[in-house]
Amino acid sequence: MKYKHELQIALEAADLAGCLILDHYARLEPIPDAPASISTDTDRQSQAIILNHIHNILPEDALRAEESREAFGDVPDMGARLWIVDPIDGTRGFARKNGEFSVMVAFVDAGRVVVGVVAEPAHRRLTYAVRGGGCWQRDDVSANPARCHVTSTRQLQTATVVQSHSRKPAEPSPALKALSPSRVIETYSAGIKLAIVARGEADLYLNTYDACHDWDICAGQILVEEAGGRVTNLVGDEPRYGLPGAVQPHGLLGSNGLLHRAALAAIAM
Image (cartoon, rainbow, N blue to C red):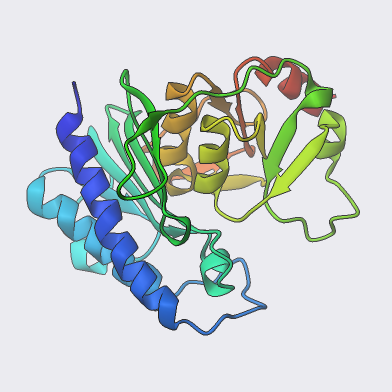
């Protein structure tokens, strides 16, 4: 299987980071009012573990990550072979100690994401994919992997949407109102939300932020696609990785594929 080596490296890096995070998590005093912008020392240590593991094995590869890369100042953050890392996606979930956070490791070859790993250490959930090899889940370290498939839902009114926690739950966003789903799930971490769609636990992931970054979505995108779904921004453009600034504009829509065109049309109205 092509990219088997890179997948193994990504799985190892996520596991190493997950062990560190759980150790810190066990001793953490919850921060109930943790803001969206929070960054912790655990984020930085997790990133260092991941980047060191990758760089020691593949020193020529470029590295792009959410936290500062001071220790890797000589390593490019753009290149044909590029790793994109979010050491703790959903740091508010980590800080609030509600388990809603993930470790995201992705590998991009010539601008296309080909390997993605989303690990949820607090819940012992792991979802991973390699281009052409499908999406897989493992919900306990001793469990055998199982193939992931998106849902077969075809009607928006019967769909389940996963999104970020609402600041005002009683006031749905215009985009959510336009979709008018039957059920809404809320959680931190874009990685978790995309994994939920890939696993068939929700039909759509809606992100209405003006912009996000490469590391917020890269590992999760391939999970959805290899499980049979589709990922674009809210104007229908596919994500592009490795560009200056690492910015992904116009929100994000992850879907089972069957609902994608109708969801985009509803949001655009």
